[in-house]
Image 1: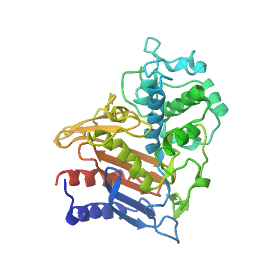
Image 2: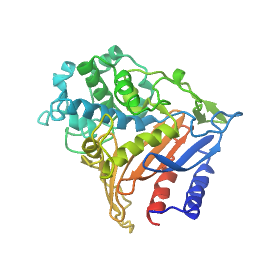
Image 3: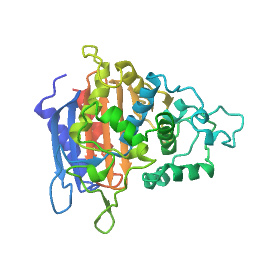
Length: 357
């Protein structure tokens, strides 16, 4: 698929329209083919009153981190250290007596945590401020019990708690916390040299803001027991390497390389749990496909274009999005420094436009 200047100009127009809505002081976005950025552009500023963002400007990418958490669990699975079908209480004994209002339900497995169908309620506002808590503090939270919205294994509901529990499992199995494990087993082998979980180590860092009367800087949090839900800090160059590494698993002409096999990377991009489409009553809009949650990734099976994978991220001070078409490996990435800025609003139509050419 050949993308010309007119195609990329339309992408720019879509992002100009998004940025004009004032959701963030700054934005950097790019179009990728595999790991290569073929077009990138910055709008606004990474620090108010100072510099504009660029390819090396670091942003907290929030829930895009979950793709690394899922990859870490699969890495342990491939090494024979964990089973996705094993109840999580086998790895976390403190949950053996976990009670819920569905006593006849299945036991929560590792796969249920990965695929967002463990029965936990959506918990973004509760979980986002907890990144820096210790394992001991997390343990105290678990002692107070876990609320359930549905029987485990029956339906999708987005849960940060589930991905924090996955990190706790990694810690119990390896004696390394998630930050250490992900850094040593994923970031370093893939040469994601500008990626970190500690804002104090990040270079060229974009300040995260929230809009009140004026833009106000958010307080940074350090790494901790909840870093697996959204703690990664990276730049557009490194994010392109990661998203390309995942998308290139579908290219039969490329060799198998890196910490994860191509088969495992493709597994991450297979729907594990269907996400029901919410539609307005009497909507006349056509269905365009089926979407679901894979392993640390949202996956769409589009009737027109085929498989599209990626994830959104929202956090105090930041918004992010990555998505790619697995057949062509064309992707669109965006990082913004406004609270829950939702650059998916531009990434989604931008990729669909490029795929329609």
